[in-house]
Length: 104
Image (cartoon, rainbow, N blue to C red; front, side, top):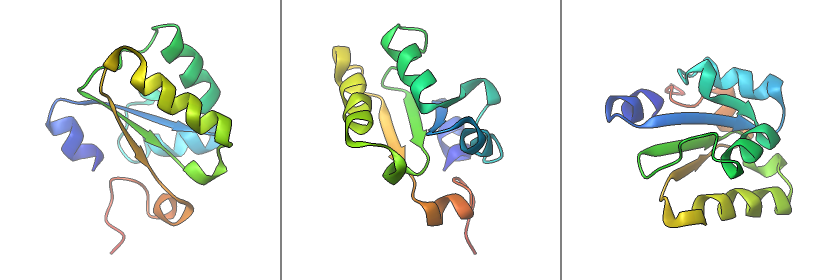
């Protein structure tokens, strides 16, 4: 998926609860400069430090590990200014096969 989004000219960002898991997203092809821990991503997005427009995709690794408030914060951030960026959430099983790679 990551390669397809990038081929479409989309900016792909990867976020996870902790840096260690976020770093794994770089192995899926997401530019290391676009990989962050969730709290760092959210702070930067709220401050306007990350360009999130309708061409952006944010891959949230292990969405189930985020708290309800964190998840709603991310949703609220995506609605701010009707920027229209997309969110792609993974689960533990998806992370084991690495986002953007076939599990076969």
